Amino acid sequence: MNKGELIAKIADEAGISKTEANAVIDSFTEAVTKTLKKNDSVTLVGFGTFSSMKRAGRTGRNPKTGAAIKIKAKKVAKFKAGTELAKAVNK
Image 1 (cartoon, rainbow, N blue to C red):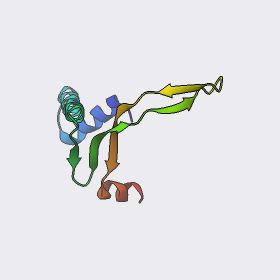
Image 2: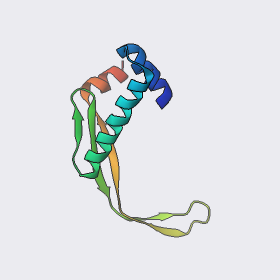
Image 3: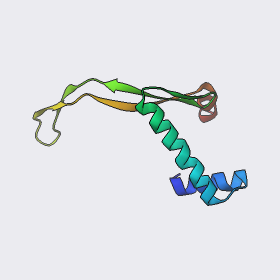
């Protein structure tokens, strides 16, 4: 499912316009992004938790040449599914 399909589904199920559904999704993603930038987490009980974590620098390999390369440390977004979501997916 892509963003357009998600917008259409939300608009249909919530009885709102696609423009309003798009605004809701954009607002949600912006709020989550801003929260993760501040090293906080967003928890939606039953759905899951969005958080950020630091990934340490490491040595990797260029797959084409096999040469060793240094991969810089960086901050990455992480999602951990809640128990209700995990159960629903495994049915």
